[in-house]
Length: 178
Image (cartoon, rainbow, N blue to C red; front, side, top):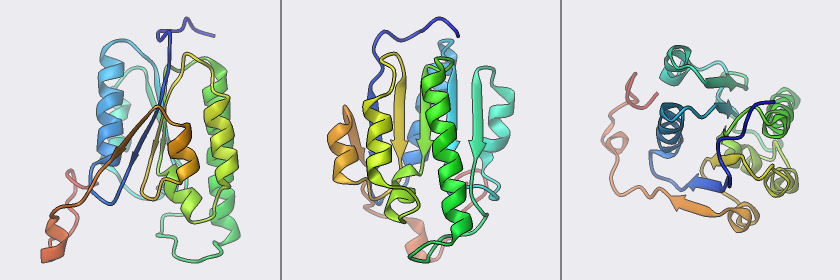
């Protein structure tokens, strides 16, 4: 167990239909690592995709990242058993990491979407939030943040789409959107 860098860790939520939720969490992670804090990012439903952050974190001491998922977009309700298993595995890792005392900042990327897709129960996530050690800064990202998670958070930021190039047919660009 390491010495705790933060006296008080808060719970942050980045949600909404606009671009920038994961990017904001990565910006916070970069700032934290720059000050010697240890960061662990767990990506829900993003496994199998080639996001740039997967490559970047290999060059940052104190930053770990693990992705879970099947490498496809989930559209089924109820979801496939394999998708539920990936989400449960990610949540178990999140519980282990949060409670280990080894990390100052823990980011649960797209966990709100995992709840919205019924891959996870909102009560399980709220329990994790409410029972986290005091020194851990916990960040939850993704559209559709449930009201229970919003209520349990200390800071909630909603990214709102005003204008986006995909509406003009511009596809996602490597290094910018992923």
